Image (cartoon, rainbow, N blue to C red; front, side, top):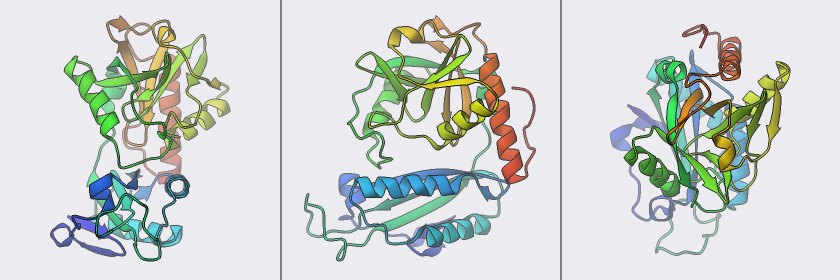
Length: 291
């Protein structure tokens, strides 16, 4: 397995992370996950834009340009020689010794980049059958718009849902649905699609952006508007979205069956439109069909 380590591609065994790297000690860093179809890095420009916005918010200097990073990510994908996968990359603020809570001088401490590329296939079974979610209080910090390495709140919410026997968590803060443990959350009511507006309470999803674009092209009404916990239980359809999951229907919230208990028609239309968008951009027709 090869790793992009700063500006070099090396064998995994060659990578050494210092014990005083701020990513290791503080979770002081950012990450992105890009879906790769037919060797094509889907919506990579949008992912990099989000990375740069996140870096600005946490006052981190990125030690590379977008062009340099894109070129190296493409080299990594080409080297691994499989067409369908997930590309994970992260950058920490770097090694600061001795350990100090204060942000270091970016002229003296350089960020550390790592990236890996692994096989990944479309989750067809979940798309066809749907998943279940448990309502879990959203107790995360108030900078959820930053794709931070600090994911303990997300991890604990997923674990709580799994302990209750559900596939995922739907997070609620102040009686408003925010998102799932690692995906944006949507409901459909009376033909209108609702999802939480961007802001500090949710991650501005790249797939979310594409779904809104596709829905409007299809004449499906979309409202970026927070819905209440009670509205979860009156929704006609629910689904989650993300770069890896694409669009996955939610068929059960707690003990409540959503709609008919099967993926809804608007959810399926949006999924097919999303897959068509991928096919058009990436030149692949794998796993196409009605879902």
